[in-house]
Length: 154
Image 1 (cartoon, one colour):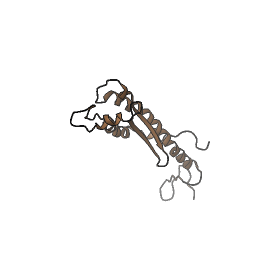
Image 2 (cartoon, rainbow, N blue to C red):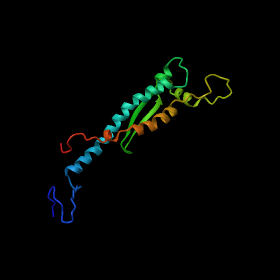
Image 3 (cartoon, helix red, strand yellow):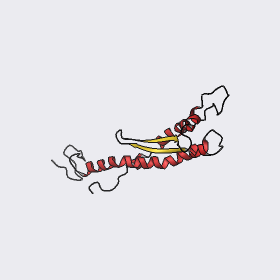
Image 4 (cartoon, one colour):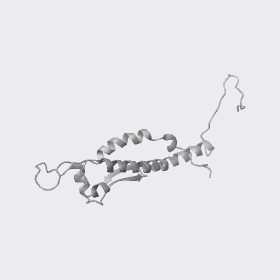
């Protein structure tokens, strides 16, 4: 028996029911929101990547000599649709020598002090991850992530 709007049943209850079947507006709307969420998450990550990259360039622990290592710090946003994942990769680019970022992060292993290069590590990737990982999650606005993007029937 269908309820009349604004009327109560004999038991004194007013019932509002939402049916999830076939292609009604609720189901289509939820599907559209679910399809839009990864796109919005990627946009969020892209916006924040600029901030993360600027942080790394301003807070690296080594002394700039040529500026190449600082210019090589970058952030890439990588989609992995198989795992339904969007990653923010912090890295030293290959603009600098491919091995140089590794030595900055982990040192040369030469603890004797003899030979060329610094034995000491000058990490920036891990410390930046530790600062921004929790911040990115805490500042993620779910209403922005799941905002409705147009009529799903179109």
